Image 1: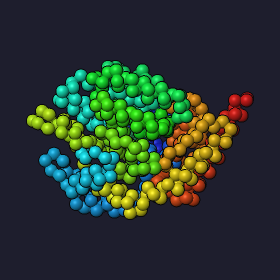
Image 2: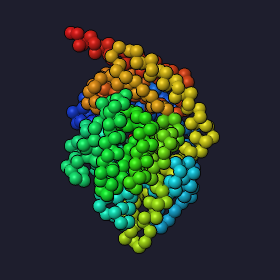
Image 3: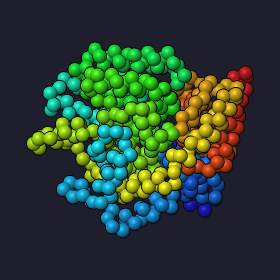
Image 4: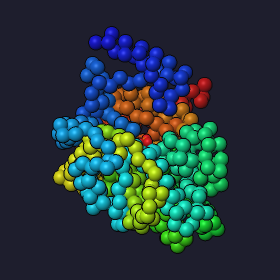
Length: 447
Ligand SMILES: *Cc1c(COP(=O)(O)O)cnc(C)c1O
């Protein structure tokens, strides 16, 4: 058994190129080898079990291997696995559009599919840009975005993102040669109230000063994931919604991470009491099981593309509306309804919040926070390249949990339907791992 695994790891070293991993680290770091997963657990070849604290990269909202998702996938596979949506349609994509619109923030009545979060953002940006090009405001060629924002890894999505370690090197490729958030003040951390006030004030001033240049503003509503699970208050989103409406430009909510109940309501937008003009959804949309995404738009945006062929949105991926993804996404929405996922996750959210509040007592922890089924703790000021989170990662792996830190920030994003006892286990492992890692750090600092 272990021979087979060693051989696979040898092939991995020789031929894979893993994401966000330097070629040097690829040679020296041993990944967790997973053969199977069930609910909140990952299993190795010898039955070792790990709680999946990072939710398969923030998307595993219903646990691994939900039986209804497995069934929906195999049922759809019997009928049709893929057909183009250029001149043809199939039931799953059509019905999903209706079901998404019924659940979306008010006013979002049109659904455009793609196959990952980054492309759902690209589509929103292109819709906003082209809308103004062909509807009388061609000077609107720029986007505004928040410092610390993350919207994906394709070039357009990177250009509105601002996590330096991720996309800084690519800045010369961005429109105007700089990220859309450049020049706006960056809050020091989630609890920096004056910093958030200054940021949204500056954003408002920029919108009012140059409304004829701004095609739209894109934000991660309520929580900036890759910036270190940085939360901010709803009132700033409400203010941004008012200002974008006043200057009549588009507000784009990137709900790739926050959507599907991660923050306690189905959409963070509705939780914040707003409705955007464009909304991006992926990750949890397919229960974290398949690459599948959608961009939702208002009827006004859609109407801006009426007219002859030259006015069409020139965008469409091969796997637009893929039947497997659409069928699974429909089943995800049905599970949320039938199993009352949102209602039942409220108690787990409170449990998670209490667990991370206790973590604040561990010497060395700078601050903690939680929102719905996301909780995070800052252990240092090293940002994404900080190493403290990785020390916690190692401790947690030895205790039976898989965490993926963001530098000096650790977080958990458990399935919304995790059992109370499993969440207790995860919180206990996080607590012990943070205490051990920071203790170790203090010992080292004193040597
Ligand atoms: C993950 C993420 C993306 C990118 O999604 P991919 O499927 O990885 O391309 C975009 N925006 C946000 C807010 C995300 O968290």
